[in-house]
Length: 144
Image (cartoon, rainbow, N blue to C red; front, side, top):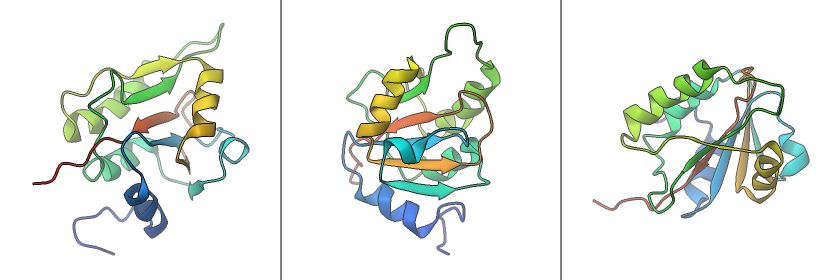
C-alpha cells in the first residue's frame, strides 16, 4: 500500500492509469458490460462500485479540458428509462475532485461499444446499476 493512494486502486490499475496519455479513454464498466468482448486491455475490479472508484481515481487523474465532454455514459435504449440516481452518484466524486467538469454526455449504446473498442483500458467493476458504465477521457496532467 502507498500513503495517500486509495487501497481500492490495484497496482495494475495504477500502472495502466499512469501509462495513459492525453486523450486516451478508460471505461469504468458495470458488471453487465461485455468488456472482454470489446477490448484486450481489461482489468478486473469485481466487487467495487463505480462511485468509490471515481473517488479513488479522480484525485490522480486529470480529465481532458480540451473536449466538450470528458465524461460519457450510455443513453437508454428505446423503451428503457434511466435511473437519475446513478449519474447523480457519479457526479458527487466528479464535482468534488474535478469541479467545473461539464455535464456527462449520453451516447448511443453502439457508439459506446465503438468507443470501448478504441479505449485504452476497460475496468470491469462490481457495479450493478443499469446503464452504469462511464468513460473518462484523460487530460494533460498539470506540472506544478
